[in-house]
Image 1 (spheres, rainbow, N blue to C red):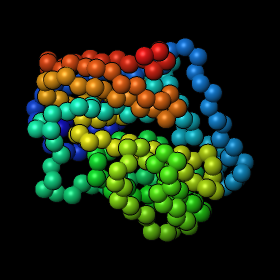
Image 2 (spheres, rainbow, N blue to C red; image 1 turned 45 degrees about the horizontal axis):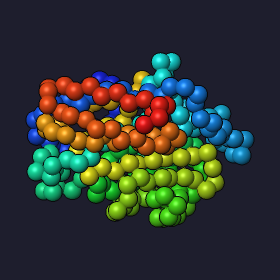
Image 3 (cartoon, helix red, strand yellow; image 1 turned 60 degrees about the vertical axis):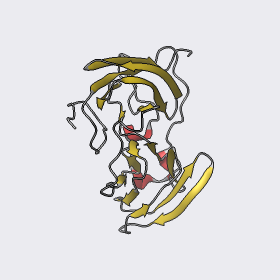
Image 4 (cartoon, rainbow, N blue to C red; image 1 turned 180 degrees about the horizontal axis):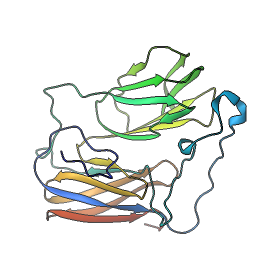
Length: 228
């Protein structure tokens, strides 16, 4: 696959030649209230970072960290290869934040969480409200690796530092991306056809729109602030 310079996340899997599905995810109107990280609970964590903010937007309304996935794909087109294991999704606990805060992954990719901070974190993972695993990770401890099956959205939190949040959104197809700082995304190699495009954001929720792919490049823009 060819990665565009501003593409934050794409599939590390072979796909058939096809169109580039690209566009921009934005939000208009008043923004929802969001929690403020109180890092005074642990002075060792410092003053904070952009990783604490669940809603990052550009000056023109572009939404960062939205996950865009194609649904309803013909199983014969662009399926994942089963000849080799998929590389793990790596999440770092660094500066008392999960880095990256949001990732997209292929169904079946294992998740590895590593503590790079000089202090204790308590990793707690959820699918919706269901707890999946709960592991203490002291300074210098080995990374935690887990196989996650039957999960659409994996949420990570730290029971010691409540502002920490991380997300891994899984896809059944190799056609997904995570938006950049201006809300832009690109998905390469999409076969011609009719699909549903799913947009997920941790604070703005989910939206699904219909798309028709028939050209070399297709532009799709979604405003998460507008009523469907």
